[in-house]
Each structure stands twice: as C-alpha cells, then as structure tokens.
Figure (cartoon, rainbow, N blue to C red):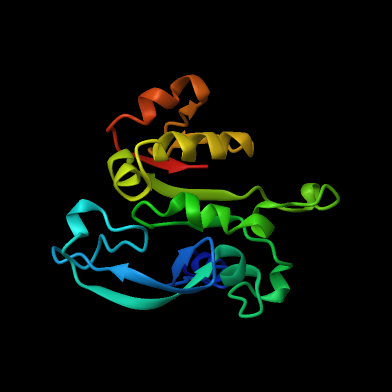
Length: 177
C-alpha cells in the first residue's frame, strides 16, 4: 500500500535543479570549496569571496514553474502547492520573481491548495548576501503577503511582526510558510 502511495505522490512532484533569482538570464554561481553545498548565486558572502565560480543560466520561479519551459504539467492546472528553496541567502530575490506563482485569482482561491514555501532562514547568510536589513526585509515581505511564518520543526509555532527582531538575530531557523 505504501508503494502505491509513493507512486501517486511522485507523479505530482517535480525536482527542479536550477539557479533561481528574480530574473531570467545569466549569473555567477559562487562555489563553496568546503563541500558540495553552500554555493551562492547571490552576492558572494565573505566565506565565498575567494571561491571559484561558474557562469550559469538563471531563471525566476515564475519562468521555471509556470513559463514556456514548464516543469509543472498542464494536467496539474498550474497548481503548485509546495516549493522548497535552498538558495543560500537568495530567497527574497527568488520570491520576488514569483509574482504569478504567488497570485491566486479570487475565482480560483477555493479550488487550489494553499502554497507552502519551505526554506532555511539563516540571518547571518542573509546579511552577508543582502545587507544588514535583509533578514527583516524578508520577514516583512512575507508578512505583507499574508504568509504564516512558522518553524519547520513540526511544533506549529507561528511568528508575527512582534517576533521579527528576535528571528532576525543570529538564530538559524527552518521555515515553513
């Protein structure tokens, strides 16, 4: 029975390995020498300032998921209900490139599942790649769009604007929105 369930779910899942930002074009991916992870498309954090890089094609979430090179089959009706990001500080830029994905017409709101976005919230990396106000800017941007900001630890803790100063401190949190 579980194999059947996995088969049903896997037919509705698409893994997109792409450099994501708020534009479509070309960019420089700064490569971490320490591991196969931690590469950053965003402005190179101090830890990557002397790293090697690779020029890559860049796409927005809208283009990757809803554009002409769709990863989302038309049979899904364009309904994306879960996005997992691992962008090493580029989360806000990626979300800004998702205007179509984030816009649900009122006529379709009752017919679609709510969009859940999962990413690791690391204030120190956000500051390195986007400036000192980047963590607060990301939190306020999400709140302005009525996302519920939650710990991804399964406890269901919901955070509001009164919590943003604490969240923007150097405490790393996995978020589900």
